[in-house]
Length: 563
Ligand code: ATP
Ligand code: MG
Image 1 (tube, protein in one colour):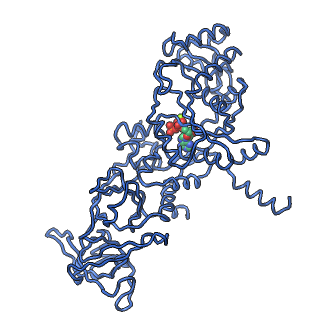
Image 2 (tube, rainbow, N blue to C red; image 1 turned 90 degrees about the vertical axis):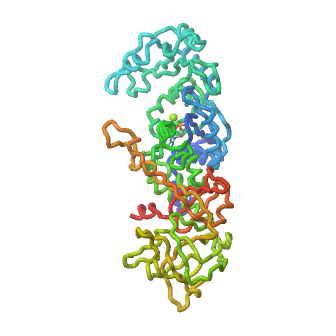
Image 3 (cartoon, rainbow, N blue to C red; image 1 turned 135 degrees about the vertical axis):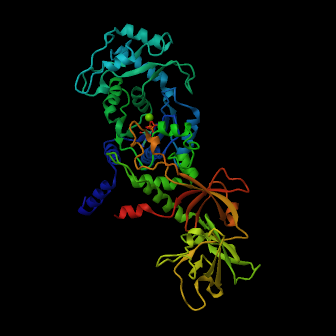
């Protein structure tokens, strides 16, 4: 290899994440097909953290022409439900991925059971009659070895008999467990005779009442990987201490050697990301459901107006790290702006209206103005919007006593109406209490389309809607669900993440919108000029459209990252 191509190869290697480096190494050592899996437990809806795992697992399979399975890790009958299975499948597909196989850990219960018997026969597993509490107390500590169970040395025959009777339902929950026989003095506490099976007389969402013993995560997970011949089993960092156990089961059963690799889980500011906590928010009505647009779930982000592309871009920018970190929510917002800016249509809407009358504009005159649909996309064309004598503008775009260098509307000041004329504010009409009712303005008839009667220019441009033709809509303005960067830390003694809920995270306003917005479908996305990106909500009625604000136009991320 000459110097130049050597350099290219090194650059390429540098741009690979650590898992890709491992995979390329494995391929060069003869690994024929890369198989990964995404293994959710169907006990809740997927969140943006899962999106990272999905993009990583499916992305690697795509990149290396391998396979990625969707495997439901449904070994705990208590918390699982088919509602969650369906939502998970929908979310993965919505993100843009297709699984090679759809599997359920519960489909492997027979095989797992057989392997458990095999370990018993090899004298590598035993039935323990101790209570959960006794087992916990005899585990020892990080500095002290554990104590062996008085049942540890049962004969293979006795263990087999008891395990079969456990399976046949002869015992009550908690009476017995099956434990791996490893080493009660092992420096890794998880290796001190971990529990493989517990008795649980609970109906399972797929296997019904067939089983009353269920395998523990550590026993089921690696074996399921092995059954599917998963080559790279990728999980989050906290599982690194489980790796020796993962390998121990596979090595002692002498089955396909799947291997586990850990990466840093995604954490986001102003968000909680554990399903248990998200479930609590739903159950205790702190939010309106799993798809409440303030939630970090995929289904909520989608309802809010996020696109699969924006989420994939985000995951890409976050990268794959080996150390835990917290990502600024601003980055996620930046990514959705990036994506929507390029492709959504612009429309005008006024969220906090103030009436504006152009006193020198002929009464009854109808004028059609051509407005650009998307300046970033010349194929998107223009649309016709009716102009008129009475308009609404944003209350925020007027100031009675403006500071210096104020470029929006003020008494005696001039501003351009987007795509239309320059207007000058002549009079502020107020009620008895001093509240502004109307602004009376004049317009420069020659200023249409960018010019003016005497060549003067104005700095400010504001948006508007026609008071006679505008429709009304409900617009939902969301803020962060939590008021603290890390909601898990409560300032109150013994407090919880609930103490950090932002009591002001949902505001609903009645807006005036361009009539064309009424023709849109649920899920359609727009940029409301100067305000942000909005998505039509599923609660909309034919005569009452509702729009969710996905994100404002203000970019906090670019500023942050430039620092
Ligand atoms: P939670 O703690 O939110 O309940 P979990 O890890 O129990 O999450 P699973 O359904 O077991 O949820 O997760 C499926 C896969 O998604 C696992 O491989 C898990 O490691 C991964 N995953 C879960 N949360 C994150 C996250 N925040 N970042 C990256 N990957 C995640
Ligand atoms: Mg889990």
